[in-house]
Amino acid sequence: MNDPLQPEHPAVNRWIVAMSVMTATIMEVLDTTVVNVSLPHIAANLSATIEESTWVLSSYLVANAIVLPLTGWLASYFGRKRLLMTAVAGFTISSFLCGFAQSLPELIFFRVVQGISGGCLQPLSQAVLLESFPVHERGKSMALWGVAAIIAPMMGPVMGGWVTENYSWRWVFYINIPIGITSLTMLKLFLYDPPYIRRRSSRIDYWGIGLLAVGVGALQMMLDKGQFEDWFASDLILALAVISASALIAFLVHEWVVPHPVLDLHVLKIRTFGAGVVLITAVGFVLYGSTVLIPLLLQTLLGYPAVQAGLAMAPRGVGTAVAVAIVGRTVAKVDARKMLACGLCLSVWALWDFSRLNLNAGYWDFFWPQIVQGVALSLLFVPLTTATMAPIPKEEMGNATSIYNLMRNLGGSLGIATVATLLARRQQFHINTLGAAVTPYSSPTRATLESARSLFISGGSDISTATQQSYSALFGIVQRQAAMLSFIEAFRLLAVLFVLMLPLLFLMKDPGRGPKGSGPAK
Image (cartoon, rainbow, N blue to C red):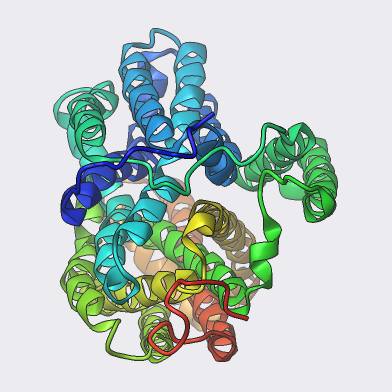
């Protein structure tokens, strides 16, 4: 148990503290996406199928999702500095073991350990940043945190592809070791627990921990595997849905009435925080959903190699990096709700612009909408976090950031699952619709077939083979057009979701005009 009379600690520059926690956070956030492009190499090297290798991603995400909401309670029970150092050490050691794994089961086991360790890093680092800076300077700290939360997931696939192609997939994990050692050293030297971080109760909410772990774990696995298993046509997905729903409902009821909850849900009664949690869920949905859509469009329909597709997505990171510093400085001077409204509107414009693309789109057709989207994400993330956390007392900050980050991650998982399902289902629908118009009695169809057949005959094919090749080529055209239509609908869905979020801004209070973190604002 922590001593309630904690000794005074030396004053440390808040920016040094910020860099200490951000080093670990960037390492963890990168690891959520950097492995994606390495899966084929991992599968080949460890004698596994591509489908089996996806458990390398799933195991990490499930373990991460289970631990993330427990972070606030773990910090108050064990101490924040001790928990952070343990998490960074665990993440660094498990990264080495992941790179050294000789079989797929070994790699999956060490990824679970890595996910458990990494789950604490995001909410803890955000809580430290929010507490280290006064309310009127929190925009600057959240601008720094936004670099990890927004830019790192975009850069992960690019870095992973480059490292895998030039070295080995094992180095995707080994590169974490020097970063982890650096972070661990800085945390040891510069981070101290504030006096209000102390063990509040000797009682452990075993039921709450168990129900939360089962509910969130089953939900994350359902979202991750749903499209592969054809959703509720699969007994596995149906069972996961029932388990998740039952456990989470029981968890909500239990946590609302238990005297010492592992996750204090009463903080959601603060109107600004509740609205902010809904908004960050939507931001996660759109951010991760569009992060999946754009590289898929570039690679599957426009023929970009993986690394080039990652580079083509760089303008969004550039837009965010440029805007986030400006937004961080101005958020204390401008009504955060106005900045959020601008961010939502700019995001809608960018997503709608993406929905107007076609199969002839070039690099510059992607460049400017991504710049706008990057700026919009800065206008969303920094003011949203600042406004949402403003009415939260410092002693509740760890609990609040756990809920906030959990919902952002679950929103991201839901966005990825929704986008993947929408693309598959709508492409099949459009294939049927477009295919119905492709008949031998259609003049455009006959002209296309004749042109293709002449081309194949001139290439050396006989008439019969050329005819079959012509029909295959025509079906390929239908498939690509149907796929493009499904991408258009997905972009429009994301745009409509942000439009629906606009009324929530009226429920929030501007942190510059309300209580500055001194207590809950209703």
